[in-house]
Amino acid sequence: MQTLLMAPLITYLVGAALTLVLPRGRLVVAVGLSALVSALAGLILANVLRFGPVAVTMGNWIPPFGITFAADAVSAGFLLVAALVATALLLALTLERPAQHPALAPLILMVMAGVSGAFFTADLFNLYVWFEVILIASFALFALGGAARDLDATLKYGVLNLIGTTIFLIALGLTYGSFGTLNMADLARAVPKAPLTLQLGVAALMILGFGTKAALFPVQAWLPASYHVPHPALSALFGALLTKVGVYALFRVMSLVFPGLLSPFAPLLTASVVLTLIVAPLGALSEPNLRRATGFLVIGGIGAAVSGLVIATPAGFTGGLLYGLQAMAVLASLYLLIGRVEARDDSPILRALVLLLLLSLAGVPPLPGFWPKLILIEAGLRVGGYGSVVAVALFINAALTLIAVARLYTANAWASPPTEQPRLGLVIPALAGALALSLGLIPAPLIALAEAGGRALSDPSAYSAAIGLFEAAP
Image (tube, rainbow, N blue to C red):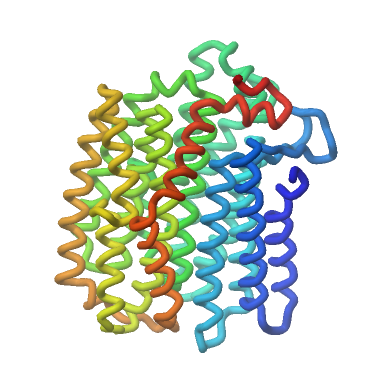
């Protein structure tokens, strides 16, 4: 099973190279490869849920030397949902009649290679590498349209994300210079021995870098300025997956490397989360364009997910992870359906699905977004202190999001200006939306996965033991 950890990454990398040279059928091949990765991720997830985390170090080096890949319920669960979302997006693009850009399939597969590498790496420098792979490939995807608005969005997305990556790189230099290692499990035992001021400085830089990637307040402005511009399937790819890589990195690094700093950083994280939860739906309220307004709602969801890090209990981690997992499916489906809205489709099925998915972002029961918010609010109130503050902010976010959704749906949803880009058919977006909504009606499997992830983040000793450092707690 250890060698299987590299299979998703290799599949995506080889697929990107293969589809680059194929004369035709690139998207069809990409769909098949992404479906294969979904199956591989499912096997890995089933194995880690049954036997615990697994890891492999490149070149058979003894940890912490060499680059290590590791999988637990958190990383394997995120990869499985990401691969399924990518498969649906690629399938929707494949069924479009107009010809697509020949670089589209290779670039999407490169983004997914970066996503899979980021989820499975156990080395911080390797995480930086996969951030760069994601950034470069997505930067090219933004620019594929070639119009002035595409280049404007590309510049805003690329420059601001590059700043976040640069901050993370500076943090890596300080980390290696101070602790002599970048293996996350090795850092977990080296960091507590360092002076507190050094720990706080390095952690603050990492929070800022990951927060920029995740679009947390106050470094969130790049997302609504760019995500509404490209093809709806690409908006779905970016909105569903890319910010979740930043959320995953925050959860992984803070729970494994800096668990003792969650309390000192609680005021800062609470302020950022609360402002994210409140400012995002206010932005959606002020925005008449449906796809651009959805970008603000993506940001609000990031605040909900990261609130689990403020609560910092198994239940808090569970709620944060659950929100991230279900939001990947909900947002991908919503962006695909918005593509039909922009094509002037006025079918009752489309109207109903768009409304239900928007209501899910507000946390209306029994839709998918309701269950993680319920878990987070209950966990926050139980913890008290900053947890209670976050719980109140989640209530406010739900109310403001519901108002924004009502305004968008009743006044502006069907008045979005048409674009010159080819639009997706209704079948795949509708099926994706129905499947995403089913997560709210049958929430038990996803909640069980999030609970396993919450336990793994609360006690990362099994993750470190799989790498070859520490022993698993009895």
